[in-house]
Structure formats: structure tokens, C-alpha cells
Length: 276
Image 1 (cartoon, rainbow, N blue to C red):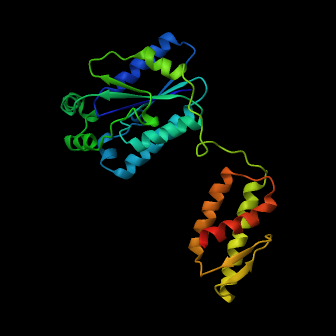
Image 2 (image 1 turned 30 degrees about the horizontal axis):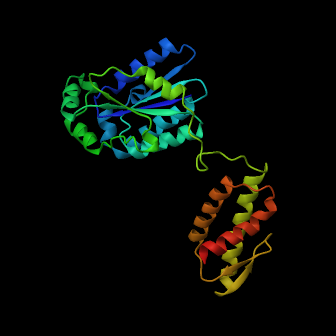
Image 3 (image 1 turned 90 degrees about the vertical axis):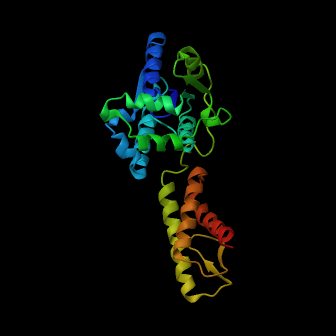
């Protein structure tokens, strides 16, 4: 169920700590299954990935989706990767909120010089080039215990013993954070809700574009299925209407209505307020 996010410089000992935590949980919590998600599992060629921002983003997305897929009520997921971007750690935090599960962050704290020494001791296929290593160190965003997504935070120095029991208490004895509206899935109120919303909003856009061909600013447009009128205060482009439609659909999915007949009026009201 819980998620453990490791982070640190390249060659800071993250994989070592992941394996230590896995062994500790297996020895003391025999009913727990452990999943270690790592970029090593995907045969990632590190230097090529971190030299290409697009590929790096794809790898992060793959790690996130794998961790999300494995999260459940019983198992522990350990994410062994650099996780050096605070925005990505925030995304992982949102995943745990949506899954109603606790999480923690383990920061493998080490000086860049010592991490560089460890990197040079690696086998050549696993070694970061100095240019890539320096770039990752420069871009590293250290976890901050005052932020929700980096709490609880365990800072582990190179020569420290891993505080395995404290980490397990944070994972197993702490209530998960309550889901907020942005991370909680809402049940649709009607089996044909999405279909009706798509149809009604598309018909509204078609009616507005047709009316603009003959109408003038100040006219009021009749929309199929709506009792309210669309106020044509200016010329509106199709791309602008599509953008407003996407925003309305996103909002309405989070706040579904029982009566789909209300959707036409709701969309007209939304357009009148947004385009005024």
C-alpha cells in the first residue's frame, strides 16, 4: 500500500538503501509484499536518457505509471530513482493521495565529491559521464521537510544505518492523507453522462459558429436544448470555443449532475461568464 520515494545525487547509494529497506520489511512484516521500481529494471542507458530531456520525461512517466499500477492495500512500493525534481515528487504525492495510502521520502545525503568518487568506481556501463553527473547534481532539488510532498522525510548519510523501523512506522502506523478534489475520482451520475455532455457541448459550438455568420455583436443566440440565450458580445473564434468546451468538460466531470437535461443551460451560462 505505502509508497517509498528515494532521492539523491547519482551514485549516492539509493539502490543499496532500497534493498536494505526491502530486507527489513520482509524480515519483520512477513505479510507485506515489496515491489522495487527502478530505472534499472527497464535497461535504461542512463547517459543517453539524461542527455535527452524528452527521453528523460518518458522514463519518469513510465516509473510513475508502474508505481501507480502496483499500489494497493497490502503491498509496499519502493521507487528507486534519482527523483531529483520536486515537481515530480509532488506528482507522486498526488498519486498516493488518490490511492489513499501513506508515503515517505528517503534522502540519500552525500557530498557531490564523494558521489563522484563512487560513480568512478562503477563498472563502465553503469557509470555516468562526468558531464551528465555534473548536470544532474546542478539540477538536483533537495527535499524540504516543510512541504507536504517531502514529508515524512528521512535523511540518511553514507555511513548511517538505515532507520528501518522508523520508516515502517511512518508507512504502516500513519493515516494516509485525505484525498482532495483534484485527486479523487468522482462517479458519473448517469451511464450516458459523457456521451450527452459531448453531444450537447458540440451542438452548442456548432450553433454559435452558425449564428455568427449572420449575426452581429449584441445578438442573443438560441442554443438547442437550452432555455437561456448565448450573448454574442463579440466575434468568437472556433479555437476559443473549443478551449472553453474542454475546460467545461473537465470541470463537469468533477461535478457531475443527475439531470443531463441541465447540461445545455450550464454550458451556455459557462460561456456567457467566460467570454464576457
